[in-house]
Amino acid sequence: MSIETLTSAVRNIPDFPIQGIQFKDITTLFQSADHLKELSDLLYEKYKDRGITMVVGIESRGFFMGPALAIRLGAGFIPIRKPGKLPYRVIEETYTKEYGEDVIQIHEDALTKDDVVLLHDDLLATGGTMLAAYNLVRKLGVKKIYINFLIELEELEGRALFPDEVEVSSVITFNV
Ligand code: AMP
Image (cartoon, rainbow, N blue to C red):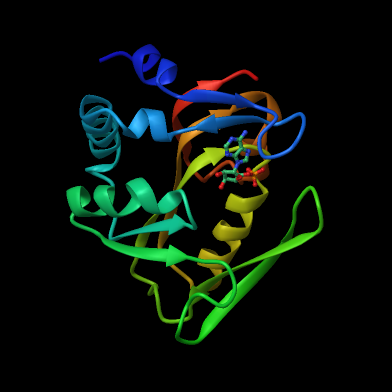
């Protein structure tokens, strides 16, 4: 299956959730068993030899593919969540969004210094969310971090936020 086939399965919703945003709806991509299998295969092939021990997914759309990928890679799964959701002791990171500030949290004992982490989310826009997640995971002192998205909005240049030594990859790219 071609990347174009996967790309055309993403539904574009103009002006959602606010005016001016072209929302990339991945529910139409996940609806097809063939597309889902292809996504899983592509991600597995890319990361199978990297020694990934933990997939870390960002609430909430990073929870769709994250655990499925963790199972295929023989890795564990760790959630990064919004405040008030994780029951044990947490560390947190505050970051600036278009309208005000946001906070994300991870359990303080979620990762160890021996972990090789695949940080995963559905979509890279400005990169603010993933940068906060990257900083959060770094605070726990892991061995190595890879970053992955299903979709990248290239024109927003979110990947420029990450240091050169961090491999950032995405399956589908859009220019708008
Ligand atoms: P950002 O921090 O700007 O990179 O935004 C990334 C987060 O916001 C991801 O968790 C996405 O789920 C969501 N997001 C941002 N822009 C869009 C968009 N155009 N379509 C769908 N989701 C988006």
